[in-house]
Length: 130
Image (cartoon, rainbow, N blue to C red; front, side, top):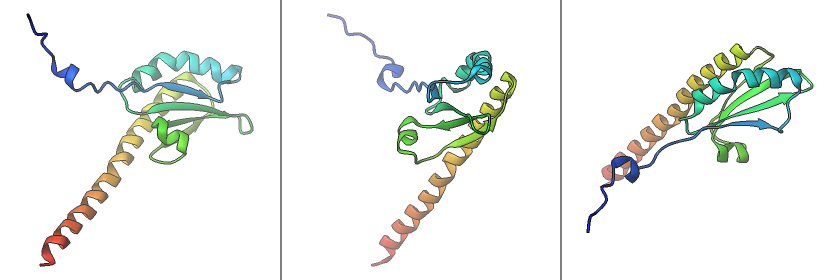
């Protein structure tokens, strides 16, 4: 009997699949045209990210809001997010998404540093109470 060799990628699967969600599901003609043009490049930008790109049209202000956020945080309306508004042009969608990715990744790192400092001070205080 032979035993199948298990690779490291099978032991620790971490393939994130960021996706694009259009909310509420309908864009008017102009924004839909620009999203279609930029869709492949936007998909490439977020395909390995642990968060999604949400596209929401604001009909009142005639612009489109791009939001980067994890799905469970988006549903609960809390957690880290990066958002920006854009009017038109497919190239601007890609540029804004790149900018939002940088903002999101910087923003998501900041609280961890503060939490670690709090934990370290609590641990030091617990050991110094003797």
